[in-house]
Length: 196
Image (cartoon, rainbow, N blue to C red; front, side):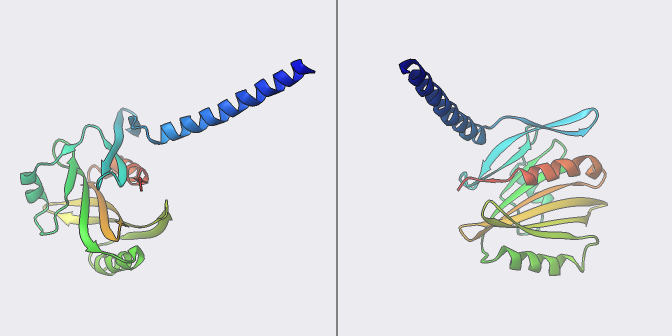
């Protein structure tokens, strides 16, 4: 009887250790910053990893080969007054991920998204707009193709608020790279994690 009781206690202890160990593994994996591969063609894989933004309040996966765009290039590439705070780019700046941490107070992402819709719909063709909830945050999403100097640019934007302030992430690439890189842009946007 004591032998059976000892076995039962041992099994219960092992189960408790396994359960608590697996929760430790889950928590550990959630915080990992491993490299993730995105296949864009049979011969091309883009390696990505998480980067933190806005004092660590959110993270997204970016290609590890992308570098921070220098200030002079940001000034040339984004000539309007509302330049992004942070731009990661490939070597020739044909693929970019721009992060804009604005001071704009936005009480409703849905209302802001509808404002974007009313601004973009008359100007651009095939504007796709979506609003959804994710990890307790309302997300606005816009996909469109915009004209640029002698070419077209594919844009995939998401916006949300942190402490009431608007945050914008924009993946963009030239239309000639769009077929291969749309998948990466979607992957980047889908990788959004809130750390609050």
